[in-house]
Length: 136
Image 1 (cartoon, one colour):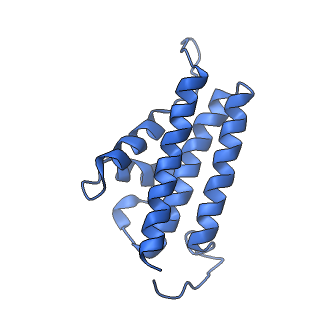
Image 2 (cartoon, one colour; image 1 turned 90 degrees about the vertical axis):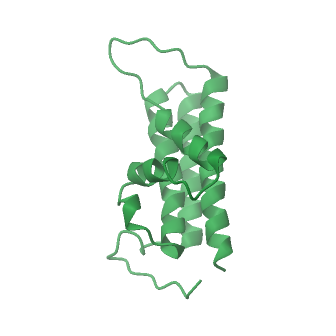
């Protein structure tokens, strides 16, 4: 990987790859805490943010305009990327399937379902970390 050059005015280069991974792990901890306190909306948003933040790290070392700019766009692109293992695509789809509660609809959420969603986000983060490490 070439030397990272920080640019506080650039949405992607404001953090280094390692900082994006750390930010993703922090967001994942907040998502888990949200789920633990019964905040399904916060948990669902948090897992998507966590996965997307980690993918920012991957974008720094392997730029790909098809991934878009938003965290969700990154995860959507990874879910359909034939160049990554099926397990990573499946984890991305699981992250995208995390839905906040909607009014008028009762959905059953269990700790097991939420843990699977958190695990899926961990898998996406691990994939992003592996991409970064491949370029060191």
